[in-house]
Length: 119
Image (tube, rainbow, N blue to C red; front, side, top):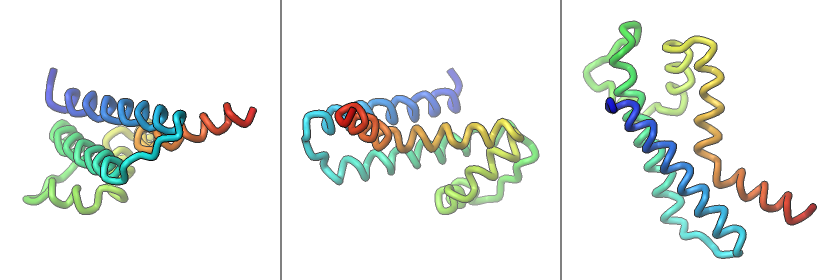
C-alpha cells in the first residue's frame, strides 16, 4: 500500500472511530472531553495535509515551492477545494463535501440521534 492510500485510510478510520465514540457518548448523555475533540480535529487536519502533500507529487500541474508542506498547513482550508479542483476537475468538487462530512461526522451522528429520539 502506497503512502497516500495509507494516509487516506487512516484519515477515514480516525474520522469513523471518533464519530462512533461521539455517537455513543451522546447516546448515553456523557460529556466528551474538549481536549479529545481538539485532538481529533487536529489529527484530521494533519492527516489531510499529509495526504495533500503525498498526492500532489503525482500531478505535475501542481507547483511545489520549497515550503509547500508548511504552506498547505497554514492555508489548508482555502487551498483544499482549489487543490481538488486543479487535480481532479469537477469530480474534485464532489469529493470536497465528502471530506467535510468526514470532518463533521460526529456532529451529524448527534443530529441523527436527536432526530430518532424526537420521532
